[in-house]
Amino acid sequence: MTQYSLTCINNSSLSGSFVVFQKAPPMTIPGNVFSLAWFVRPAAPQTKVTFNWTLDYCFMWSETGVLQPGITFNPSQMVGADPNGSNFVQLTADEYGASYLSPPNTSGAVGFLTIQQLANVVPNRTSVGVGMSGSGTFAIQAAPNMNAVFTPHPNYWVLFGNVEPGQVMDVEDVTGAVEVSYGGSLTSRTATLGMDNLISIA
Image 1 (cartoon, rainbow, N blue to C red):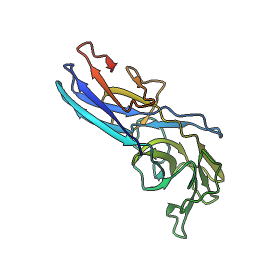
Image 2 (tube, rainbow, N blue to C red):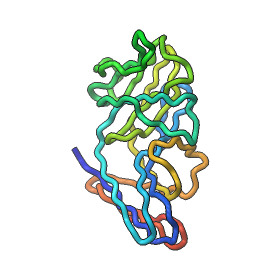
Image 3 (cartoon, helix red, strand yellow):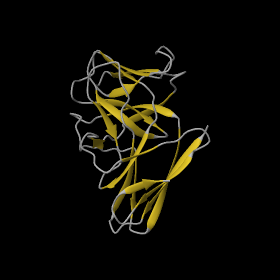
């Protein structure tokens, strides 16, 4: 499996963290799909950090309460997923009301990741989502008798700021984020925060 990397260099006078996130692709259901702070690493002035990942996916859920920007999505469970294999999972609850994901199977649409939320899912208590390389990328509020269908579409954005890992982001309000593109044999990029506090990609 191809490994990708992004080296982030802080050449500014600011203290903070480099944040890598993805923007949500289209979904086949209505609802607010939130981007999560996928990778976060603090970087003092004149230092650098490197993020590494592969395109391996997972399903996840978290007891978030109402899902909204600013809160942290801390996965309560993560199970492996494959858009072309184990692409379907169910969120349900046991006899004591504890939520859990069923073992994934291949009954979903090929090329998509589907989370079916069963009738016993309590509204506004849990959220479901997908992740990549062991960290969450997107989440949506769970609701009874709903399907969340995610379209895998890797894209990468980097910003510098004060964000916690897994924090729910409002990408419409994000400023200073720059897209980082990969393609073909290009699997390693560098993002540099300059003295002008702007990020450039090489």
